[in-house]
Image (cartoon, rainbow, N blue to C red):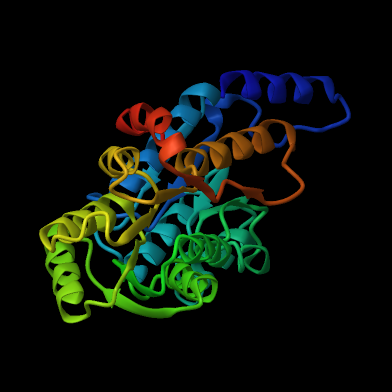
Amino acid sequence: MKSVLKTLMLGAALLGSVAPLSFANAQDTRIIVVSHGQANDPFWSVVKNGVNAAAEDTKVSVDYRAPETFDMVAMGQLIDAAVNQKPAGLVVSIPDASALSPSIKRAVDAGIPVISMNSGSDVAKSLGALLHVGQDEYTAGKVAGDKLREMGGKNGLCVNHEVGNVSLDERCRGFADGFRGQVAVLPVSNDPTEVQAKVKAALSSNQAIDTLIALGAGTSGEPSLTAVAEAGKTGKIHVATFDLSAGFLKAVDAGEASFAIDQQQFLQGYLPVVFLANYAKYGLIPGGDVPSGPNLITKEKAAQAIELSAKGIR
């Protein structure tokens, strides 16, 4: 990461024709990150680790903010508050464009450079964002569905811990299109106990289910694995998840789960801060979106990802 950053900095320094913006010194540059990620979701702790690493590498001031629950009203208010502070750059996730677009457009109209990350790839440009760092969720879901169909799956369950989050809904839609079999969506919360109980009940009520995909490794993937085990169906049901956790990766490595889909959320936190820091100092910005995923982590790849996941990087 640091070598890439040094290369970017050197390249920028050599481009004498690029006039730096008003934020000449790194110490004067403040970037605000507003995500929809909940505090008890291990996925978002990795995103925040990426943000913190970028702040350290670029020597800029970065504030990371998120609502306590999946609350678009509260998130919009956080974005509005950030705009009022006139930062050098703003990073946002966009799980619900209709709810958040007024606040994001307000930032753009105020002349604040905006980069979206994680969710919102389909609407980022229309809202005025410079670019998006993340994965296309429908495509990722379809890739997962294709793979699970190839593995013999015919009757699937998509465990959605944030129904109403457009990105997660797109994952289930893509999965259904790629899977081409029977697919039911199971709405749950991000409470592991509830996830485990509802998945177990679903497996009990429909013995034909042979495939299960969760939309978050720590929030719904691991509890789903526990439910499958309690139902006595470990190895009989293909279980996959979006995103990574050390616990789920160990299950993949042990052959108890099929795969995990890595969207490299560390980069989703890291890269937007690096890009905005360089934009503030040199006027440099990539010319297009940066796809951070999807990457399928199967048994062959699981072992090498476990250590970094435990460290909060994968």
